[in-house]
Image 1 (tube, helix red, strand yellow):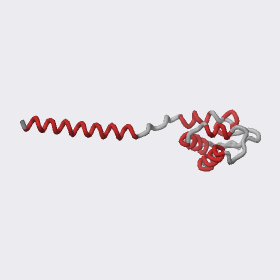
Image 2: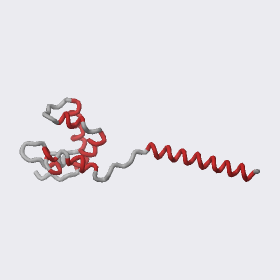
Image 3: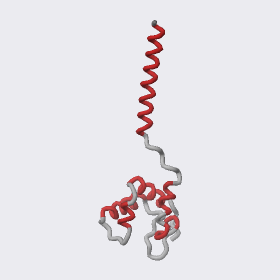
Image 4: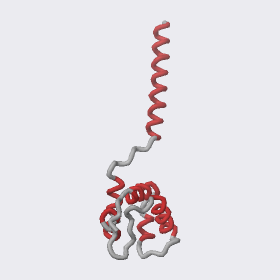
Length: 112
């Protein structure tokens, strides 16, 4: 009888550990794909050039500190900066996506 009680107790303990491990795993968000930042930033190339190296009078993004780019995008989202289209584009990104994009451009070497 004692063996049956011990076995039941072990099973109950194991089940509890599995439930806790599953709950902890479910709360951990997956790591972003390693190329996600580059892929998101590629959408900026039409106006801001490949890897943020703009041509003409367009704003250069390559080499700009990430915190400055994040703040600028927040200003566009809030409507605090005048824009023709950037306020609409900024609203299409989550804060996490903006951080990824800003980090990508901050790491690029400017050609100008």
